[in-house]
Length: 422
Image 1 (cartoon, rainbow, N blue to C red):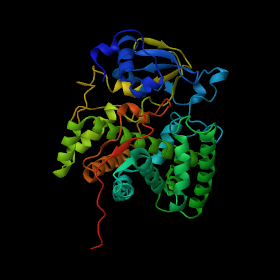
Image 2: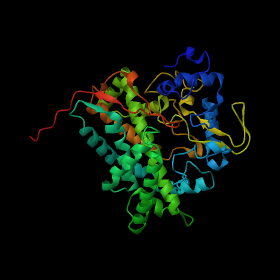
Image 3: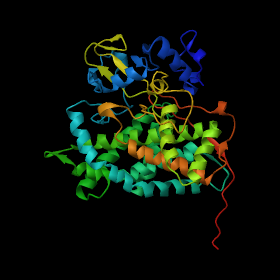
Image 4: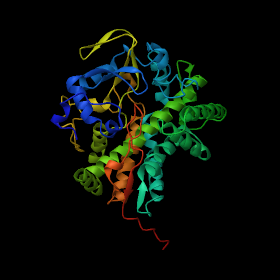
């Protein structure tokens, strides 16, 4: 964990494999010595990293920082390197992560009508059913890879159900999504091909839902109107795509990172198990927020581009410059959080930035919280002696700039006994 000494010494190397394993000491150094820091990313694009909480919160809400890549003053070699691979070619750019008001305001209002807290609450029994079904698949074995067998399929099947993807097509979505989160670990061009396949499928599905709507989210998107305005087919496809993309990988990492940190902090995990055994939910609720703060699923907020010269944290940012808000650094800022490098599931004052801030605050946050709470509480209840299998040092984190998540999470536990028919 980061210590006061970790922020001393020469500037640490960013974006190496060692950094990916534990970026927090490097972020502590940046917060202290270079809180708004210009760096070259692995893609070759140069961008500003914002690491202090106060600066991060200001930047996330600053409308001079546009989400539209058209504002990027990009050299030729950086063309198309600032978004989701393949989204430009697949005509999936018109979604909430890439647009500004007034279009953002209109689209978010339309989508919010189809993505209400009531709809999420009604979905809770289905999330619990999926959670138990997936644990049933490995509970008798005594071992599992919690990423591939649990954290990954749960949000994929959940978001597919919510969107209205028929059950018989959901394994295709699982394959495409699996390719999308490998972040360079798969075949060359695989992500863009998966995005293109998903785009074609969504266009066909939207057409079918127009003819025969249901109670699902895509039907809701099609029905949603605001002063007579409807989503165009491109907007509906882009919106379904980003709800899937943003709505599953964040939850994969919330479940994976959260479970991993509970296994690394046995005293906190024991407190949570005792609380759950007593039928309480308050520690689970604050605990999920603390896991989001401590080692959250989104390391850097998605791209922003300065539409004019501006100051962040006393640093002059040029018009057209990309800005990346480092949520993982801001959420460990000792100027905002007491004992930021300590995991405290009961932490009350916890206005973390894990789901962003301002007009781009994550629309799917209630669903992610629901899935995270169901997944972690059910794991701890059904597999009470769950522990890491192997050395934590052997675990590998997925490459990629925005998200933070484990490639695998091997665990072992006492197998559940098969319930007899009698």
